[in-house]
Amino acid sequence: MRPYAYVRAHDVEGAVATLAEAPNAAFLAGGTNLVDLMKLGVETPDVLVDVRRLTSDRVEDLEDGGLRVGAAVPNSVLAADRKVRTRYPALSQALLVGASGQLRNLATTGGNLLQRTRCVYFYDTTTPCNKREPGSGCSAIEGHNKNHAILGSSEHCVATHPSDMAVAMAALDAFVNVLGPDGERRIPIEDLHRLPGDEPQRDTILEHCELITSVDLPPLRFLSNSKYRKVRERASYAFALVSVAAALDVEDGVVRDIRIALGGVAHKPWRATKAEETLRGEPASEENFRAAAEIELEDAEPLRDNAFKVPLARNVMVRTLLELSEER
Amino acid sequence: MGQHNGWLRKGRIVDAEITLRVDGAERRLTVDTRTTLLDALRERLGITSPKKGCDHGQCGACTLLLDGRRVNSCLALAVAYDGSEIITAEGLAENGELHPLQRAFVEHDGYQCGYCTPGQIVSALGMLDEAEAGWPSHVTEDLNVEEIVLDDEEIRERMSGNLCRCAAYANIVPAIREVSDR
Image (cartoon, rainbow over all chains, first blue to last red):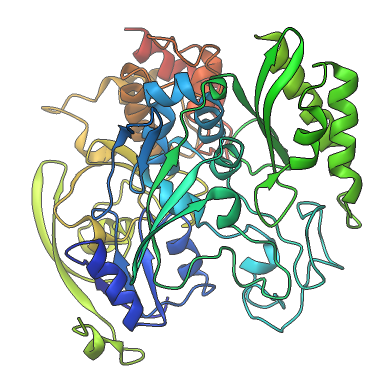
């Protein structure tokens, strides 16, 4: 591992100011992804600014009835939070179905959002990868791409975002609070992560020195009728092939409101807005769920090894929505 | 700011002084900032019960309790946990008596080669506390349940971060269940 200086700033402002001066520095929180990538030589920061004890590690009520999750809240603690379990079950479920008990204790809310793809070529420094080394090429497009994207990819990158938590937060319409040198800004989670385009090295819209300080969950009541469903190759402790987070508000058999987000299919948590629009105001039936899922997946461009993800994503969407409509 | 500029000279190794409380004893040491907790314990303090399996957070052999919670020590930088309280499998016995989990692993033959065993035992200890605190798991039927009942399915799910290449799982699960049932 390349040597680096370890810095513990006094406060979040100091941490941001340190990164503003050091173009090759990185924030460190739980380290479950960053330390691993540093061991492999994929990430090579020369300064680590430890922010784990600087941001909040509490889940707090907001005046509007929502919840604010501090960036340092461990994944395990967030999953077990009673208010999250009751009001945003999809978020608890997504966290519990990710990683292992040990990793969830170390990993933080902010860090989870900023984890990097698990594309094998991104991890393998002997192969070309536009995300790791811009301009070097994408090894996955013609390589082993079973785990890769079917939506929103580019000729430069077909990697997927690995987080389960972020998919649930996308379906819950969360906001990400960020601190930069010029103060705070509030980003709809939908806008935090980006599609690869011709800059696959950029996972998010954040500037180098911007720090996630918390995530806000909105006070929408029907989010208590939400669910996260993940399909993977092992029964536990594996990344998603496809996952679905959904929230459904049905009255007299008609969809009043709906949120759907997909994981494992794109460079970012994929908000299924087309399917949502198709279903709003329509009867909550299996037939309609299936039609909406198919409309969402019309633009899918599977690679050699991952065509299975298209029907899989459709079926998981349909099943998840059916379960949510039956449980009402 | 700007205080770090002197440290940015490429290739310069940076040391830090830290204090850890390991299995009840205070230990002071100077570590290269790149040192993980696992390497600090094994290579610097001679505490070798946390094992280096994959060194990438995938196998759980390095599991220890860090300020009361089970973690993969191969992914935790020692310098970031200055002042922390650490419990390893070596610190579980009291007055020469094995911890109930250690005894149960012996009685149920919950291992073959034994390499993953210290991690399994410490992980089980942390897991039992999590269940006691009412933390649900992926297989908990009712997310809002008050009390967790640790059946085999729950134990398997909650212990999925600890791999055993000898596949002693069939004996590890009953060993843990015996202790959780008490």
